[in-house]
Image 1 (spheres, one colour):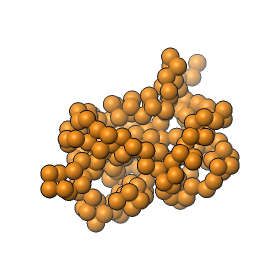
Image 2 (tube, one colour):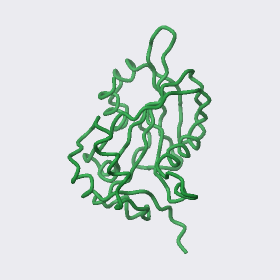
Image 3 (tube, one colour):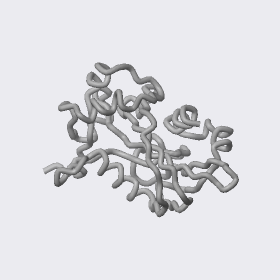
Length: 201
Protein backbone atom coordinates (compact mmCIF):
# COMPACT_ATOMS: atom_id res chain seq x y z
CA UNK A 1 0.00 0.00 0.00
CA UNK A 2 1.31 3.42 -0.97
CA UNK A 3 2.14 5.81 1.84
CA UNK A 4 2.39 8.79 -0.52
CA UNK A 5 0.78 11.98 0.74
CA UNK A 6 -2.52 12.83 -0.91
CA UNK A 7 -3.11 16.55 -1.23
CA UNK A 8 -6.12 18.78 -1.88
CA UNK A 9 -6.45 19.88 -5.52
CA UNK A 10 -9.01 21.53 -7.77
CA UNK A 11 -9.15 21.11 -11.57
CA UNK A 12 -7.92 24.18 -13.42
CA UNK A 13 -11.15 24.10 -15.42
CA UNK A 14 -13.17 24.91 -12.27
CA UNK A 15 -11.08 28.06 -11.64
CA UNK A 16 -11.28 29.10 -15.29
CA UNK A 17 -15.08 28.76 -15.20
CA UNK A 18 -15.13 31.45 -12.47
CA UNK A 19 -12.60 33.84 -14.01
CA UNK A 20 -8.93 34.50 -14.59
CA UNK A 21 -6.36 34.81 -11.79
CA UNK A 22 -3.05 36.29 -12.87
CA UNK A 23 -0.79 37.34 -10.02
CA UNK A 24 -2.75 38.63 -7.01
CA UNK A 25 -6.56 38.47 -6.98
CA UNK A 26 -8.20 40.43 -4.15
CA UNK A 27 -11.77 39.16 -4.70
CA UNK A 28 -11.33 36.11 -2.47
CA UNK A 29 -14.98 35.15 -2.06
CA UNK A 30 -15.71 35.21 -5.79
CA UNK A 31 -13.18 32.40 -6.31
CA UNK A 32 -12.63 30.65 -2.98
CA UNK A 33 -16.26 30.06 -1.97
CA UNK A 34 -17.17 28.13 -5.16
CA UNK A 35 -13.81 26.33 -5.16
CA UNK A 36 -14.22 25.06 -1.58
CA UNK A 37 -17.87 24.15 -2.29
CA UNK A 38 -17.04 22.33 -5.54
CA UNK A 39 -17.68 18.60 -5.90
CA UNK A 40 -14.53 18.59 -8.08
CA UNK A 41 -12.26 19.09 -5.07
CA UNK A 42 -10.29 15.91 -4.38
CA UNK A 43 -7.22 14.49 -2.67
CA UNK A 44 -4.68 13.20 -5.21
CA UNK A 45 -1.18 11.66 -4.90
CA UNK A 46 1.32 14.49 -4.53
CA UNK A 47 4.01 13.30 -6.96
CA UNK A 48 1.96 13.44 -10.19
CA UNK A 49 0.25 16.66 -9.07
CA UNK A 50 3.61 18.47 -8.83
CA UNK A 51 3.96 18.32 -12.63
CA UNK A 52 0.31 18.44 -13.76
CA UNK A 53 -0.88 22.04 -14.28
CA UNK A 54 -4.41 20.85 -15.14
CA UNK A 55 -4.85 20.61 -11.34
CA UNK A 56 -4.03 23.34 -8.81
CA UNK A 57 -2.89 22.49 -5.28
CA UNK A 58 -4.61 24.72 -2.70
CA UNK A 59 -2.05 26.30 -0.40
CA UNK A 60 -2.90 28.55 2.60
CA UNK A 61 -0.27 31.34 2.71
CA UNK A 62 -0.35 33.11 6.07
CA UNK A 63 1.27 36.54 6.61
CA UNK A 64 2.06 37.37 10.25
CA UNK A 65 1.85 41.14 10.72
CA UNK A 66 2.84 43.03 13.86
CA UNK A 67 3.02 46.77 14.45
CA UNK A 68 5.69 48.32 16.69
CA UNK A 69 4.65 50.92 19.27
CA UNK A 70 5.97 53.63 16.92
CA UNK A 71 3.58 52.46 14.18
CA UNK A 72 6.15 50.54 12.10
CA UNK A 73 4.42 47.63 10.41
CA UNK A 74 6.47 44.43 10.24
CA UNK A 75 6.04 40.95 8.78
CA UNK A 76 7.50 37.69 10.01
CA UNK A 77 10.03 36.56 7.41
CA UNK A 78 12.40 33.63 7.04
CA UNK A 79 14.72 31.91 4.58
CA UNK A 80 13.63 28.57 3.19
CA UNK A 81 16.30 26.11 4.23
CA UNK A 82 17.31 22.65 3.13
CA UNK A 83 14.82 20.56 5.07
CA UNK A 84 11.49 19.24 3.83
CA UNK A 85 9.05 20.99 1.58
CA UNK A 86 9.37 22.46 -1.88
CA UNK A 87 12.97 22.02 -3.04
CA UNK A 88 12.41 24.43 -5.93
CA UNK A 89 11.97 27.34 -3.51
CA UNK A 90 15.00 26.85 -1.27
CA UNK A 91 17.24 29.79 -0.30
CA UNK A 92 14.51 32.33 -1.01
CA UNK A 93 13.18 34.69 1.66
CA UNK A 94 9.47 34.33 2.38
CA UNK A 95 6.75 36.09 4.38
CA UNK A 96 4.23 33.25 3.96
CA UNK A 97 3.64 30.36 6.36
CA UNK A 98 1.69 27.38 5.07
CA UNK A 99 1.67 24.30 2.92
CA UNK A 100 -0.42 21.55 1.37
CA UNK A 101 -3.78 20.38 2.69
CA UNK A 102 -3.48 16.61 3.26
CA UNK A 103 -6.13 13.89 3.18
CA UNK A 104 -5.60 13.40 6.94
CA UNK A 105 -6.88 16.96 7.50
CA UNK A 106 -10.36 15.76 6.51
CA UNK A 107 -10.52 13.13 9.29
CA UNK A 108 -13.58 13.04 11.57
CA UNK A 109 -15.56 15.34 9.30
CA UNK A 110 -13.24 18.31 9.92
CA UNK A 111 -13.02 21.19 7.46
CA UNK A 112 -9.86 20.06 5.67
CA UNK A 113 -8.82 23.52 4.49
CA UNK A 114 -9.00 25.21 7.90
CA UNK A 115 -7.61 22.16 9.71
CA UNK A 116 -4.72 21.89 7.27
CA UNK A 117 -3.88 25.57 7.54
CA UNK A 118 -3.63 25.43 11.32
CA UNK A 119 -1.69 22.15 11.22
CA UNK A 120 0.86 23.72 8.87
CA UNK A 121 1.20 26.79 11.10
CA UNK A 122 1.75 24.62 14.19
CA UNK A 123 4.33 22.50 12.36
CA UNK A 124 6.32 25.49 11.12
CA UNK A 125 6.15 28.00 13.96
CA UNK A 126 5.24 28.56 17.59
CA UNK A 127 2.64 31.34 17.59
CA UNK A 128 1.90 32.55 21.11
CA UNK A 129 0.22 35.85 20.31
CA UNK A 130 -3.50 36.54 19.98
CA UNK A 131 -4.38 37.68 16.46
CA UNK A 132 -7.13 38.86 14.13
CA UNK A 133 -7.40 36.85 10.90
CA UNK A 134 -8.56 38.03 7.48
CA UNK A 135 -8.51 36.46 4.03
CA UNK A 136 -6.85 38.91 1.66
CA UNK A 137 -6.61 37.33 -1.75
CA UNK A 138 -5.52 34.54 -4.05
CA UNK A 139 -2.16 34.15 -5.78
CA UNK A 140 -1.54 32.34 -9.04
CA UNK A 141 1.80 32.75 -10.78
CA UNK A 142 2.23 30.55 -13.87
CA UNK A 143 5.61 32.10 -14.72
CA UNK A 144 7.51 29.17 -13.18
CA UNK A 145 7.16 25.41 -12.66
CA UNK A 146 6.19 25.70 -8.97
CA UNK A 147 3.63 28.41 -9.61
CA UNK A 148 1.87 26.54 -12.41
CA UNK A 149 0.59 23.84 -10.06
CA UNK A 150 -0.24 25.88 -6.93
CA UNK A 151 -3.02 28.29 -5.97
CA UNK A 152 -2.22 30.35 -2.89
CA UNK A 153 -4.85 31.68 -0.49
CA UNK A 154 -3.42 34.68 1.35
CA UNK A 155 -4.41 35.09 5.00
CA UNK A 156 -3.27 37.98 7.19
CA UNK A 157 -2.88 37.40 10.92
CA UNK A 158 -2.57 40.76 12.72
CA UNK A 159 -0.73 39.88 15.94
CA UNK A 160 -0.98 41.59 19.32
CA UNK A 161 2.66 40.76 20.11
CA UNK A 162 5.70 39.46 18.18
CA UNK A 163 5.71 36.08 19.91
CA UNK A 164 6.64 33.87 16.97
CA UNK A 165 9.45 31.32 16.70
CA UNK A 166 10.45 28.98 13.89
CA UNK A 167 9.91 25.29 14.67
CA UNK A 168 11.78 23.87 11.72
CA UNK A 169 15.33 24.10 10.44
CA UNK A 170 13.64 24.66 7.08
CA UNK A 171 12.57 28.09 8.33
CA UNK A 172 15.93 29.72 8.98
CA UNK A 173 16.64 33.26 10.19
CA UNK A 174 13.06 33.84 11.26
CA UNK A 175 12.12 37.27 12.58
CA UNK A 176 10.08 40.42 12.02
CA UNK A 177 11.24 42.83 9.31
CA UNK A 178 9.67 46.19 8.47
CA UNK A 179 7.56 46.48 5.32
CA UNK A 180 9.90 49.23 4.08
CA UNK A 181 12.93 46.94 4.39
CA UNK A 182 11.11 44.12 2.63
CA UNK A 183 10.11 46.43 -0.21
CA UNK A 184 13.67 47.72 -0.56
CA UNK A 185 14.96 44.15 -0.84
CA UNK A 186 11.97 42.70 -2.67
CA UNK A 187 13.99 40.82 -5.31
CA UNK A 188 15.33 38.55 -2.52
CA UNK A 189 11.80 37.31 -1.80
CA UNK A 190 10.02 34.37 -3.42
CA UNK A 191 7.46 35.40 -6.05
CA UNK A 192 4.36 34.86 -3.90
CA UNK A 193 5.83 37.07 -1.16
CA UNK A 194 6.58 39.79 -3.69
CA UNK A 195 3.03 39.65 -5.07
CA UNK A 196 1.44 39.70 -1.60
CA UNK A 197 3.50 42.65 -0.36
CA UNK A 198 2.92 44.69 -3.51
CA UNK A 199 -0.83 44.04 -3.30
CA UNK A 200 -1.36 44.57 0.43
CA UNK A 201 1.23 47.21 1.37
